[in-house]
Image (cartoon, rainbow, N blue to C red):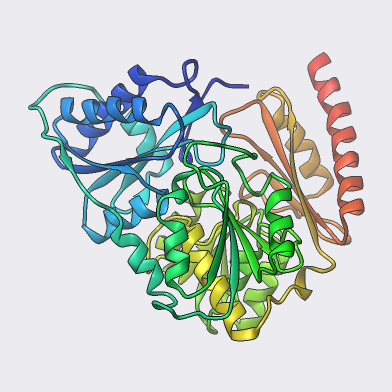
Length: 435
């Protein structure tokens, strides 16, 4: 596995090998040179290495002539919203998001959105030079929580009980009080910042403790967050972990006829069907938050998201995935209807996995699959239909990995499709290596 991944999703690696303070300083200095003299807000998640990297970034920004505004512990959506609200030119979030605790990373924000691919290339190739030293300041980003609260209103929901699995991340600081302010009863687990008792990505963890708490405490819903608060995993009142696409499904159902929604190519058919049912127009985007955001801007979409990463993007609020905002919408849904509507997902199962393959071989493998499925969508890898759903084969932009997503009518059938694809790729890969 690559020790450093540089992509529009962030600059990430294992701290001490893939990423360190020297690297952080250089990236921040180059970002400053690329931006020109400006104020740049800086926040961080709760990983042990985040403060070290943050100090290096503050120094790098100052060295490059920018004024860093230090926000301390923040969620990623909180920082994005702050950049947009305060009309700042840029921001930097120190986080590896859903990656394991040994990892860390740097997410670059420009004009309230993540940087695009061509911008990242330009930033990383920019010079790190001194024009004048910027001046550091301290700022406060917590107004974000009042803005999220406004979705429901203070004491806007009553009679509900919510379990929160904060995962030891940045959500530990203000999220419990945010939910209490909505009027719900709150049960909190994994609420100590920097103590990670489960897989950081809640979509990849079984969430056994949260599911037990939901049922034993009689909660109406459970919410689990990743380390920087942008991913949301929902557990229903029966203790069942819902598909990552569920939050996006809830929001798509609120669209009006003629409105547009940008969806990543690996989003469940359930979400696309929901858009069609309400008369909304779908715009398909490559996987990656920045790619969805680019589509939102280009096509003037009312909503966007990635089902695979439990992501909802409301451009009227901010141009990033926001787990807290999505949770407010789900609470509103329960308050209005008394329960969550789950029937649409009953006969649909989405499997997402990956195969380790040499990067140089992947294009030839995709080419051979495309010959068998000439009608496949080739926006991001290849996506072809099956009798019961679809298969998406997509090369990683940073690793020797082929990402495989499959949707079918059941888990068993999805696993059979996955085994078929794996065996086929193994044979093709062997022939190509030998050739």
